[in-house]
Image 1 (cartoon, rainbow, N blue to C red):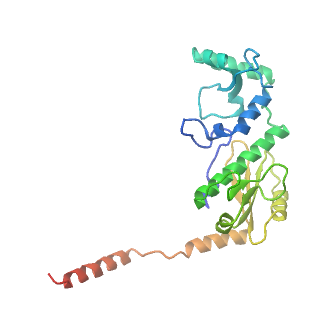
Image 2 (cartoon, rainbow, N blue to C red):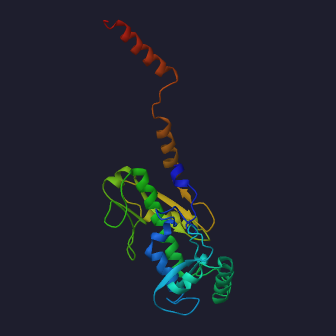
Image 3 (cartoon, one colour):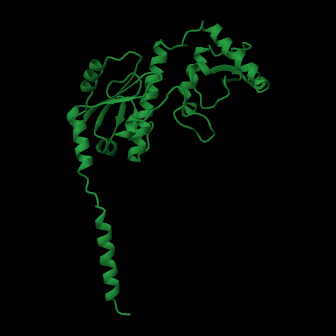
Length: 247
């Protein structure tokens, strides 16, 4: 249960890759979102070829949308010298380009991208919990765009070990009752519905049916555990048997 309530910052990291970048950096859809926002043009010189994504504050773990800018490789190289000045320059540049608004925060595309990242996060957490890989054509995957049903697709052994139908909502204004109705509508036979909701700069929250929640707690508490005295008794028996063995 604690695994599902772990704090995440989807727009500010969500893990570290082998090369020191945030987890989102491996998401090609996320990078495309930034390039689309900037019209596939270098925000510095206007070039349209050999483009890369630049971290304005030079922090590879800060993958917030307002910390990323599309630049050409030449401008990106220049920004490695006099970093303090370039940091101020790019921040002001984006502010001017987007009129200081929270960039794409209320666009349909941005909301969709955030929802997809929350789905991927859920897949990753379930994968780690079950030790089953996730991704396209795996037993754990996100719902494909345009298809109806649960937001996290679980098949075979994955669904057996994680008997929930997952509904994921990344919204700034929550309508929990309607989310629960949708979760119940998409609930698969033989599973319980599970709702995970998230907003910017807030921890994700998991919502479950109360009976299911207390059932999980009851099951966890009923797991047999050794008392403190039992290991001593077992050790004493072993020592007694050793003494009786012929020398």
